[in-house]
Length: 98
Image (cartoon, rainbow, N blue to C red; front, side):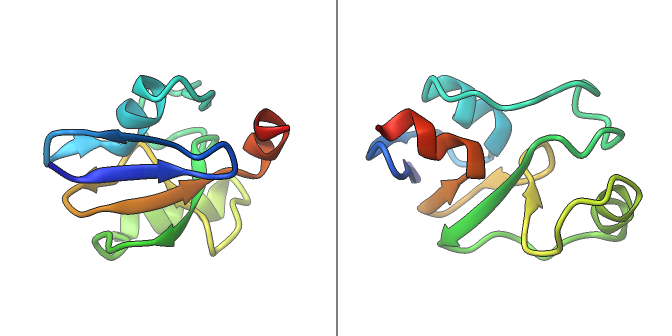
């Protein structure tokens, strides 16, 4: 099973391959926005993938990020399926590790 690490608090969990990243983040007890219900409307679930492999962005994700002014280096957690070990963070999680 893939292992996910969430710095800076050093949380980590294992999830079954194919789990949506947004669901894994919730399972780890971390906050993540989900205003649109995973319909790629809001773009609020942007996270930074620090290490590991994720599939390339599809045009629908790129368009959602453009429309919502989400930074290019962020990925939308509602569309990423976890297949490999990942290290992921969000800017607002920094306060959780203090």
